[in-house]
Image 1: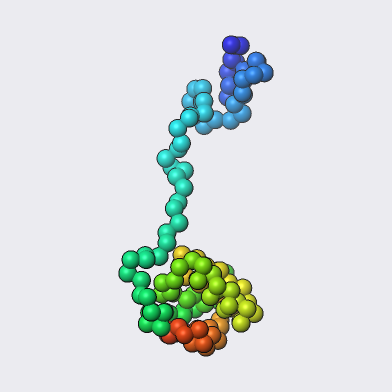
Image 2: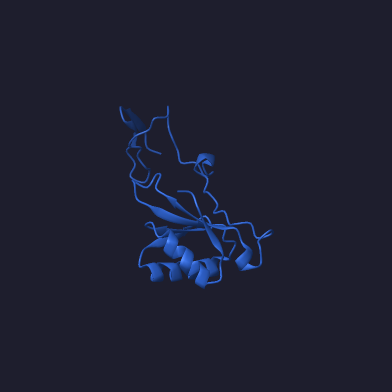
Length: 137
């Protein structure tokens, strides 16, 4: 192994097969660890609980609320309380976006529709056989 020289920015090794450290805030020689860093654990996606889901779609506690916090003042309608499986939720979101002519997404088991379309969403959900209520202001 070639001799390593201490420089102000870290370790520099003269052998071309060894790596050279460009910057380190640690003291001494820093080698890559084979063990993963516990601070960089990947977050698991949480799915809505399926055990206590209401089977009858018309009797679910579906709420339509308007949010604008944390969105730069933009309004978003959030439909909560839909205990549907992922493909059915995606299909319902697609129908809502097509009927309203706006964008939307599914986040954490809730449907988010861009803009303040609460009354229109209520009408579209009623046509789909889902009873919903407006909540919030």
